[in-house]
Length: 300
Image 1 (cartoon, rainbow, N blue to C red):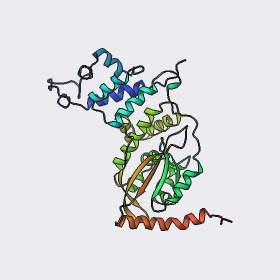
Image 2: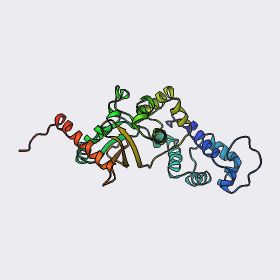
Image 3: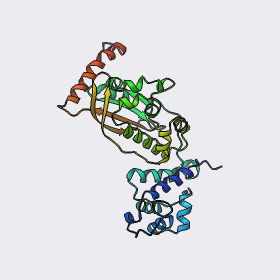
Image 4: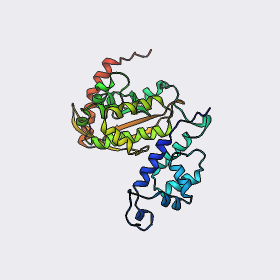
């Protein structure tokens, strides 16, 4: 029995949306007169990639199993995919392979205690761990204070806090995050990349289904098939304690589980700025709460 997840629709829509974003001029072709649809024609992609039109048409219909890496590389170059998009295309191809080679999500595992020790050692940075579905699975004291609006959101009532649920199901997220549109777009692009890696993840499918049903904005962003894997930068938050604070953030892969992908994300402020002062204020405000809720035993 074939154990492959059916990701043909994802392959089809991803390639079609990327093709639609390119003009003939961008790939060195003459404009070619009026076009019924925007972007390149299938036959133009085929010629540039060095394959037949029939073959590329079959590929764009989702029949990617067995396609060689050289051909995928040629298609990726022709469609001018960036690094994240190229990785996503190869993930789709890997997931479509027959038999046990297809990667499927298994039962989530718990994080080892050393991860929490690492988080707790960072007192002037807000640090947390997320899984591929953007559930928040571990935090340090400063992250619990900084992201209190997320952790205390009504969207966390029936399970772990989740950034996607917070952004799309809690209207207060528009007030907490300065550039909500950017944060929401990146969030959906990260979920799309995760779906490419693990199309058999039932919990992820349920999350996407839930958000697609409730949020028209999520549906539109999901349909765009944008992907994001490597990211980092600057975010501004409107925190109820400190007001506006601008922080830099950097996610890092955290290979601590054989059954589930995790990322460690660290938020910190530029030294010598008022943002650092505000972050220190949050850290001092978080410290008493940590001492009250997490007493330590004296060592003998």
